[in-house]
Length: 559
Image (tube, rainbow, N blue to C red):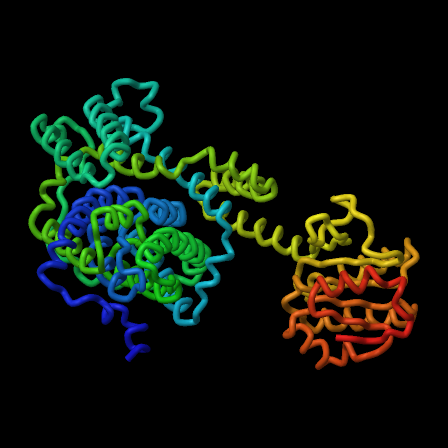
């Protein structure tokens, strides 16, 4: 039964009572009313028919919450996923065309199936391949590009940026409504984040537009949206060359989308006091994307802003999402006509207001104070994201490769220090703190890394270089930080032990963990002999090392 509840998280939902549904109603209503205008705006950002933004907020959200471990996340269209779709398909088809829709559905299905496969294979750890600085920089770069793409519509530039030099091509009504909507959304987010400001702005703009008949005057508006339940969409087969062009965007959308989910899921699980099951969330989010594709819509993801609103509004379980889906369905069936007169500039204002929160220049300054290498990685990620537009996924790939390269460099160059006894009783870097040696003719060192193929040669090199420059009779390895050893590490330590024994240098080892010691003994290392002394604790090692001058030469091996 426990296994069944794991694979089908909806079996763990609380029994719906009148009291529970009453408490969930406000959260469901708030999110449902917010996602409709946002979904339409994000559909425009993705180059899709506007109605698909509502389709992506309906069945996909329900499927995702049924199979996700994090039950209070709001799944649907998001700005980052939408701009990635638009960037990935630019040049492959005309936005809004049947071919564009077909390719977008393929992206939904491919990313969804990939996430489901990764979840079943327990590959949620792949999330760690993208560091926080890389994601932060990519998000800010994508945010800047999103804002730039929405500015022409926001400012009422009917012929794009060229309208700036042709005032007759600037729609004054769209410009005014767009700027006023943006100002209201930004101010309301600071003062009343839980208030359904987006809905109020959309309804107000619709009323003004209908009263002034802006559509008849040539202003760009949402226009008629089809009513009714979405029908099953089965994509047309694409040729092999087209399929290959979709593979890289699929990988990036999968990665970025799940990183979006992670930011919301961690908050949700921390508040509920549960351990985050990232693999089950991969499955749930993937099934949501598959459902979105079969509805003829674009890839979905967890929205941080809507998930936060869901939590702030008091959502206690997944029933809040079910109620929000009910609200969306009611609007889809009966009230899509309300959106018809809404100016496109207001939709652009909704996108810009949502994305402005992603732009945080101070994050780069703060990162520089923490780690200059990671700050440089973040800057390069940002620059490549901006320069590679519309193929902005190269930014996150470049940042990921730089981050992995830095990680590999760190592993290949572990921190190895000669230690001395500090006044507070701890062992510290002898040269940094200007400490005396623990004993005459002793080289006492510590390696803060695993004894594996990446670090073993560095340890061997550090010892041999010291031996070539100093008169040494004793070498002590403080091995407490070493928690794993592989075949290369075993071979390297055995070689080091043999060299020291040949030179009649005593090897002291302190604090070696039992799993590491077991592997070494199984390989024939650390066998008792006169040139090897082992200590269980550093305190014991220090006490014995400081008495080296008084110890007999044949003290031998001890535990």
